[in-house]
Every structure is written in C-alpha cells, then in structure tokens.
Amino acid sequence: MLDLTDRDQAFLKGEFGAGAEFAMRIIVRTAGTMGATHLLDIVSAHVDSCIYNGMAGLDFAERLRDGGAHVSVPTTLNVASLDLLHPELNRLDEPARANALRLVDAYVDMGGSATWTCAPYQLTDRPRFGDQIAWAESNAIVFANSVLGARTNRYGDFIDISCAITGRVPAAGFHLDEGRTGSVLYRLVGLPDDLLNEDVFYPVLGHFIGLSCGSGVPVIDGLPRTTTEDQLKALGASAASSGSVALFHALGVTPEATSIDAVCPPGDLRHVDVTPGDIAVARDHLTTRTDLPLRAIAIGTPHLSIDGFGELIRLLDGHCIHDDVEFYVSTARDTLAEVEARGWLAALDASGVTAVTDTCTYVTPIIRHTDGVVMTDSGKWAWYAPGNLGVHVAFGSTAECVRSARAGRIVRDPGLWHGI
Amino acid sequence: MESECLALVAGDAAGTVIRLDVPLSFWGGVDPSSGTIIDQRHPQLGEDLTGRILVMAHSRGSSSSSGVLAECIRAGTAPRAIIMNEPDIIVMLGALVADELYGTTCPVIVTDDVTFAALATGDTVSVLDGGTTLRQSDP
Image (cartoon, rainbow over the protein chains, first blue to last red):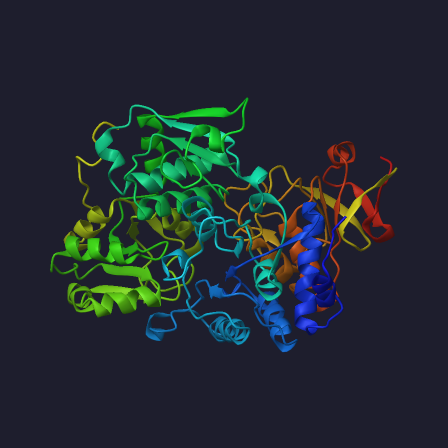
C-alpha cells in the first residue's frame, strides 16, 4: 500500500493545477506497479521526453503545460530532434520539424533549462554522491549512478517530466541501497596494460558487458585507478545501449566500489572472465562494413567533453579533412561556448569539422551522404545508427577517425590492439 | 476457462492472440504508422500487432517505448490489449497516458505463470471486469 504525504495528496486533488495533478497520478500509478510503499524527494531532474517521437508525446507535453504544470526542482533537458543553434544542418521533414520545435517550447515553458544535452554530468552543476535524482537518457542514468554515486532509476517518456513537476519518485530500485548491489562480477584476464590506457578499449568493454549482463549490475575488477571520466562515460554509454545497464561498479575506481564486499552481496555471484578473444569479438561486432566509400565521421556520442575537444584539436594538428568526407562532432551548446572561449572553434572550422549542438547525429537526419560507411569512436553510435539512419558503420579510435578523415578512406592503427 | 488477473491499465477487450517468442522494444521495434514489427533482429519481424491481443512476458530496451506505444494507440495501430507475465512500467505508462489523452483504452494485464504459459497465437480471449478477469475459449 502506498503511503502518501499531505502534499502528495494535494497534488492528486488538483490543488497545484490540472497538469501537476496528471503528473502525480502518473507517479502514483508507477509507484504502485513497482511495489513502492512511499515516495522520495529528489533534488534535480533530467528530462528526455523533449525529443520528438510522434504526436502522442507532443499532446502529452502540451496537456501538462496548458494545465499550468511547472518543474519544482532544477531540471535539465536532453537533446532535441533539431540543432537549434545551427538550423541549416537539420534535414528533418515537415511536419516533424515544426512539431519538434513545439515540443522544445513546451518543455522550456514548463521551466526546463535549455541545456539540450545527453551529458548533463558535464554541466557546471551536477549531482553529488548520494543525491536522489530523476534522470532519463540511458547514458546519463548510468553515469549518474556509477560515476557520481547519485541515485536514479531508469526514467523515460512521461515519467521523467512527472518527477520533475512533483519533485517526487517511487522509493524503489536504484534509489534504495538494496537495489544497488552487484549481480555479475567481470574479471579482466590477460588484457595488455597498454590497451587499458587507450580510450578505444572502454566502449568495447561496455559493449561486451551490455550484451552479456542485460539489466543486471556489473562489477568490474581490473580497471586502472587512473581510468578517466571520459573512459567511464564511454563504457557506460555502450553498456546501456547493447544492454539495459543503469549502474556499474568498477572496483577501486567508482565511488561506491571501495571494496568487493561493499558492492557485492555475500554468497553466489555470477562470474564472467573478460578475455582478449571476448574483446576482439565485441570490437568487431561494432563494425558492419568497411568495403564501401568512407562518407562521414561522427564523434561526440554522448556529447563530447571539453577534454575530448582538446584531444581532437591535438589529433587534427591543423590538418584539413578530405573533400569527400563530412566530419561531425556532437556536443552541448555550453561546451561549444567553452570551445569558442578557448579559441579552438576557428581551428575546427579551418580543418573542416562541423560542430553539431542540441541534438545528435544518430537521432535525426544531419549527415548528407548515407550511402557509404560512417566511422565513429562511439559504441553507442555504432549500435543505434545502422537502424536509425540506414548507414553502415566502422568503429575505431578517435585517432583512427581523424587519420581516416584526412585520408578519405578507413585507416587503421595496426599496433592499437596488440595482444588482442 | 477464466483466471484472475492484475490490471495495470483497466479496460475490457476481446480478440485473437499474437504471442511473441522474445520480448520487444516498441521504440525501434514497431512502426506506429502501421503497427507492424520492424525490429530486424526480432523473429516475428513483419507481424502486424494492430487489433490483436498482444501476449509478451515483458518489454525490452528503450524507455522511449512508452511514447511509441502511446503513439500506436493514438494512431489506431495498437494491439487491442496487452497480456504480460510481470508488471512492466514502460508498457503501463504508454497505455495509461494514451487513455488519459485520447480516451482510447488498451488494457494492460498481468497473469499468473500457468495462465500465461497456456496462451498461444490464434487463441480467442476476452479481458473482462476491467482487466481483472481473463477468459480463454475452450479449444
């Protein structure tokens, strides 16, 4: 039986307006389905329903907005279906384009911040360890839970904005200590140390874990203590694409994983050894074809960090992209402003790199030539783009992407996977 | 034969069963304009769900599936009812919101293991009493 506070009841009675009442009804029904006994307060929300998937999502948002609903906690907004800063890049047809813009307006009207990023953890204000939050977008969810140690369930359509409006979530799942224990222990066996320092390893490991772990909580033993946030981000994004991973623990690396006992229940735990052969298979699974002309490069999925831009500038080293290749980097408008402030935007322009903000190249038509191969350093892009865009994809390191973009054909670094 | 059910989204419906061999993600898995399965990796690729009683143990994949199910219900391409083996928030939310927005009900019910196992494609079933009773016609 669900125990509601007087304030929760006031929402249900419509005392905060018809929109807020609808939002609370959604929370209560979800809590009932999850078997929660009460609701919890949240400190912030990240909403993904602002991407256009059809009229139902727009009708829902406008019903809430027109019913006077407004967010009650700081709320960031995920990517839209359009680049709002660079409208000339959008190739979305009417009426989807107009509807996508109406959807954007509805979420801003309700008080969402115009952040338009799938990587809200790269914004200045981000959740702290132990914070209860309601985040949507699978890569943001797994980053918040795993790397920040904040607590969110896998929120999505309809429920994300309902949490933001009411400031409440069902007390269940990853919000509770018992929902956060590990279920599968992954041990890295025989992998070269050099490879563990390469960014390209992390989306591949995440892809392997996603395929083999499903919706479980993986515990990873063997990552270096020096593993960067960008590497953990890539690992999580892949694991949340090929699987439904919402939380992982990396022993000695992520904040809850101070020891194996801290994150694993006593008793039986499924063990999986991750071998060089497993990594080779997972890596090759991210490439669909390489024997067609290279048409484009897509990096920045999830949105590229400022450190990622620094690395890209270093790799480009003032060289130009081949005339036959489009080169896209997706990022947040806040990050692009920082790129500009550092004087890096001119260098990107001069090399022929196109910055995409507010959306992503795998969720909406932006790439002009989709008849060949697109190369990416993102496991998530490689997983979703063939279905969404109908393209063939070649997965590689960021350096391989840049080298290939300059050459106009796929160029591999033969030493990168030495020992695999 | 009748059995007791849990109604996640209340309503009555009757029709012919399509049972999915493996779980389905509505996002990227169903075309809302036609109601057919478009997931290239799904064994029942190309099957039309419109107007049938969809039987699947649970959903899979993206939480954007709620919006796609709601869009199917709005567009008139949805199943007539959905019978599941465990409570599923993504499916529940899609049907709940469509009911609220459009007054079009697609009941979502959960049955016990024995009842669930006995449901087969082609069976004629009725969801009754606001989704708390499932009647299977005798073979």
